[in-house]
Length: 454
Picture 1 (tube, rainbow, N blue to C red):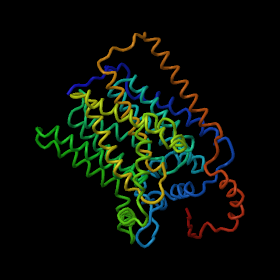
Picture 2: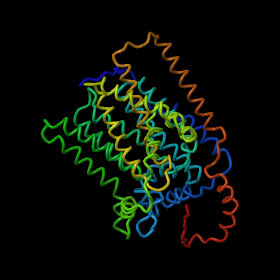
Picture 3: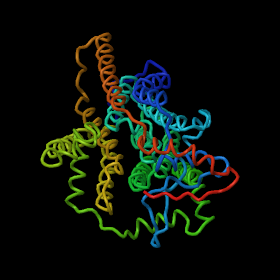
């Protein structure tokens, strides 16, 4: 198997380049955050309020589970998403920021920024700085489509999105290692992917099936590739078990401390649903809209919602045809392995979509945006393989890349700031009037039961 990368060797250190690219990509998030912090004080409500409650009690009552969701056991007992890793990830910046609602939004941006740095670093280290620029622009497209709410809201669904990008890039190094990647590095990549994938699942239970599919597929490839090396399979398996135990220690403690434990509630909720599964016709519309060269990952979730008839079919057919062609053409190359992994995960995701029960919400399958964008990028890479680069001088190439970056960053920043409102602005305004009155009536020494109705 040979690598066909034309962006190596790298001439700059990967991490500084990755940080610069990530900061540029994050300008729209910084702009949205600055505008909100400079405006009216935010009083989190609903899902955002439970996020801040988890954060405020982080040290005195360490959270053992994730955000509460539409999750109930067979007796109707309320459950939560699997684990507290999102609270752990946000807490350092939240604490440094003074434990305020503004610090809560800042902590969200910090987690997004860290994920972007990690993703771009993995790309730059493997394929070089120009590939890092392309990866950064691709992430910027995902940010633009996700909107300003994604950038600043401490919502569990959003907190898994960019880490899922990181997990897939880690697994790319596992299934299709570069020339300087040995078995030990591949094993470590898989172990780290287990930790990152666990974070995604703990943020939102909907990631469980596809994360497992991706991790197990990559592990199978790793074991087959290293079967001639005695005991090579032990390191990733042992490391994966350790990473799993560490990442899932809090949910396990919760499961042991109360009845029913949250893991029991999750099991009963997903194995014995009390609502019907989505119709196959709806599942087909979802798949054809998502697995699309101009899908929601590029155009945003609202475009296909209003044009959900024949308009989705051309993009879907092109994506399918391009993928089949790319897999056939890339035989014997790194890209083929990456395409196969990506589409195996997509296939498992398609099956999981048919098992959605109750109302369908597009945000629950945002992982499809990542997979569709990665699949298209790999197909385009295969199409350019073996072809000479355009006759563009170094300065012109830099100028073209700079103009493209400035244009996309400017457009995304404008869209993020235009009409920007605080999360739950109306509820926040109501609470801002009620809070001073309640503060006088509540005793800080007492304990209060808070009920949430979603």
